[in-house]
Image 1 (cartoon, rainbow, N blue to C red):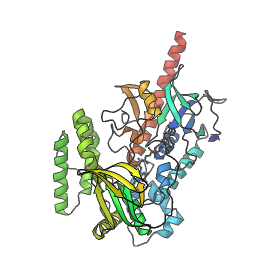
Image 2: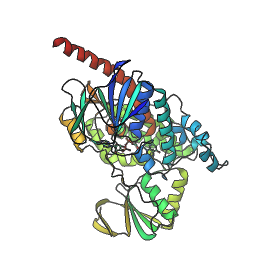
Image 3: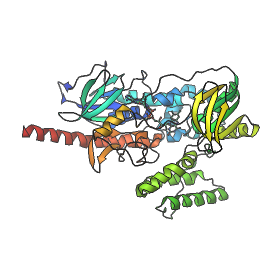
Length: 463
Ligand SMILES: Cc1cc2nc3c(=O)[nH]c(=O)nc-3n(C[C@H](O)[C@H](O)[C@H](O)COP(=O)(O)OP(=O)(O)OC[C@H]3O[C@@H](n4cnc5c(N)ncnc54)[C@H](O)[C@@H]3O)c2cc1C
């Protein structure tokens, strides 16, 4: 392994092996680091990898580790970065002395527990360092710049534009820009106590933030603003695997969700809990999504997505219990509405009854950020025809390998990984799905590099 300073050149050559494949990863969040791990493990030719991100840190995922104290809402058993070893994260945790010391032996087993983001991030980074050390035939360069555009290179492959209009050629580019450029400001760790705090957001992150403010005495009352009015549901106390029925899943949106509701009600009535049914449904969601009409997909986004998300992104049971205690005691109030404006003394809220000013001593924005599809970078790949938006406009149209498809079967070396593919692949913003996709992409890269070499030979032959 070689880590180079951030000066880039257009060609990479090694005296012993000849030209190296030049690969770029744009974004060093969890998806970017995971893509690097998968390439280092699965792409078995020498290569030169450049990882772009203006964020100075390299760890197991900028945003995951940024919320260090936030407990991840997936169990340890679902967070392995090795698709061949489902218990890799558990094994890593068991060797971690700090983790062992803080575990209560009476608690659930390690596989079933929930851990803070910083621990997961340390695990991912360690796995990245280990695999990097083993690849003496790979050059890795970290470039602390944001990428502004991507275009076809006049020779072959793709050009990346960054910094002050610098341009470098790559054979393949992996976009892993997730929820866009971050402003870099960490959350303040201690805040002075205030009475009324507004937390904007109805997801796991917003609930976690509200509970932490109350627990630390930093707020005596929190108003949670949920755009859909939904809050996350609870995980089962003990992990349940996917439960699937023998009955075929109806192929329409309405039919599939009626089927899901009935199965979940039956499971609840029988005492086995709806979570296993939901887990089983998610395994079939990709086929269902592929069979829906464009109009049904749009209806899903408008009417079903919020409730679907509240059942798939679940709270650890302990958090769920604390949330409902806080709701019952009045320490947390939930308001349904859309925030129109944030001011220093509160927020302007649009509700079904009209506009309302909600006074607050402090406002914290924990809204889920959509993928940054309107950034200059995305506008460039759409304009040059390297990629297309998916039809529900959640991101970029991709196949299961993460290949951006400008037209059916037209792949030109640009991959769009993780949450960028949310309009094409259900649940692709979650760790297990990202892990599987990055390994699939690493296997697809070899064929693309071969294809590119053949194209080069054809061009050279013609000249
Ligand atoms: C607090 C938290 C808890 C989570 N818990 C879970 C969980 O329990 N289970 C689970 O499965 N998943 C969890 N996740 C993962 C989550 O679901 C996301 O899918 C994941 O964080 C997405 O990572 P990402 O790398 O794609 O995007 P991001 O984290 O948004 O990272 C994108 C990176 O790209 C960089 N970037 C953006 N634009 C450019 C550009 N033009 N040029 C260069 N760099 C650029 C940004 O600076 C950033 O570092 C959690 C995430 C967070 C933040």
